[in-house]
Length: 415
Image (tube, rainbow, N blue to C red; front, top):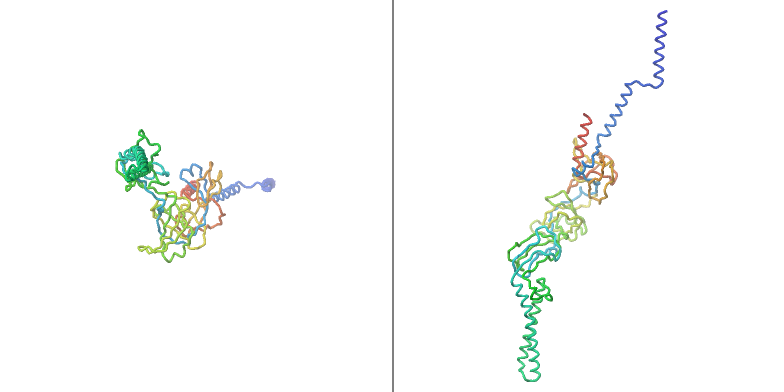
């Protein structure tokens, strides 16, 4: 009897457990296991992405651009220098000798045509003005004498040689007055406004062109004249590039062709020039031919005489390329960072230019593996392992910092 009772109790318990299972109640351990799998998947997705705040981006100067098309694998490198044509150079000089009283410019100053460069003084300036004022009286007297001698000559009273003498003296005085008038104008003084009360002992030396002061030769108290320039001025807006190319490479050059170049001692910025003339004679020392080009676009930081390194296209196909600072090396592989999500719009920019991000909340970046190619003039050719849409924004400056933040975030999450 007792055994039968125990049997029914056991059977009731088994049925109750079965009923609970058929109503969808899963064991607690299975539920915990599913949550663990979901978390692991989420961590894997976050492993190649990081979000930086606006302050972080601004502090380290993160810049955004796009993948550009450049011909780096089929190029020729050549050296050259920048120069300014002679008609875009000038010296500020004084047409009259004098002592420098004031200097109003320094090296590096931008000046306009006609702007004051220096003031010089000389007592001789007063003597010229004094002579000009006095010669008017002399001319008036000479004209009266000429009229008198002419009347006498017509009446056969006076000798003709006296009329000739009066005529010559009057002409001489008029010529001297015209000469003094021009000299006073060259001094920057209006002869018509000249009077006994307005005599000037100094004159202003002005700039003959618009340009930048490249050198100052005089100093206060020094004597200068037409043979002693006060300052040299250069108009850098007309910079030319002279590229020295070997004979075998001349067929690669065509008038109108674009040449990319960098300043030899500052290779971080690329400039562009356009060929307008191909030289016809060899340089006896280097056995090269000069390729004359005009610098176009941005000329910031370029100065007459700078040495440059130029890259000439050999006619190959262009391919994707990014600035060297856009690539990071991690675990023996190379990566770039794509802008995936941004709180706020990117500023408009021209092709080839970069800009700072303008978000207020933060920007999300994703790390993408690439294969490196040729490197020239601060750019490296790349082959992304996955397809990247055109005009996709990437980090072009500060990728190292983004990668460091990504690594730190990964370590903290693992911990």
